[in-house]
Amino acid sequence: MLMLKYKYLILAASTLLAIPAQAATIDVGNRFLIPNKADQVVRIMVSGGEQVSGLNFFAQIGDGGPELSEFGLDPGTPAPTITAVDIKSGTIFDGIPDDQSNDYSIPQVAMYSIAITEPEGSVPADGVLATLTFDTTGYTTGTWDFLLTGVLPDFPGGPFDTELVSTRIPELNNIQNGTISIAIAGDCNLDGRVDEKDATILATNWKMGTIYGNVVGGGVGWTGGDLNNDGRVNNLDAEIIAVNWMQTADPAAVSVPEPATASLLSIVLLAVAAFLRPRRKHC
Image (cartoon, rainbow, N blue to C red; front, top):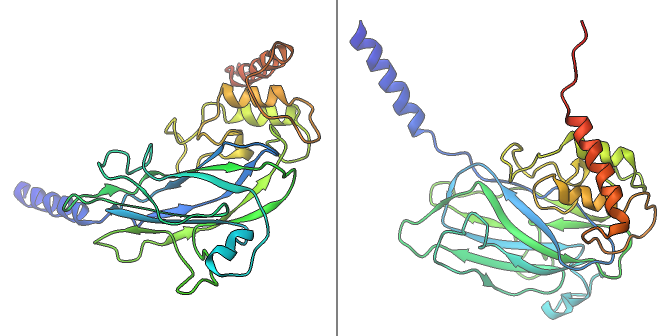
């Protein structure tokens, strides 16, 4: 009887080991950037854990922009631009010796790729897939499509889809496109004002995020208090709220608080501390 029990345990364990990792999933999400500012970073996450050996990365903002004429297409409409893409440093491909390639990019369309040349080499598709840098100079409001699939639909041979390369699962394009929007820096709840409601959201999600390891997927995002899109909610986001306290119009570029705003930062951080303080239970 005991041997039979061990036999079933061994069969169960072998069955579990034979289950492949879930196919990769990418949810671009609805991302928010502040007006008139360059060097704003957005991280795209991937989950599922499937072993992959390369990435063909395509991204498009809006309809592709005026520079579509470079592809022989009708010019599109201007929008915030992609100024840099990194699918190597700090991503799931960080540890491999191979470099990324910029295949052909224009301000609103990015085409990058990376491949593991080591035989049988692969990495799990779970973590940061790509880091994109945006420039919103000249824009104070607006929302645009943020596409990783269906890029350049009018291009001969298009549309282009972001694809993770796998030898076990032929189709890994489980991707949900999103948007890019302009919002007031610090306005977590998007009501057009930076105030105590935004500070409460920050406090509620304090020390949450993918980098802290306590949020799965794309993190809590802008509306959860991650105002600088770095994958965590912390004092840097509190600084953004403090600098832009009571703003209702186009704010200045966010920076480390000056002495005049240091007291506001203290107030925000005290509010966070008060929110996190254990509450006494009443009998």
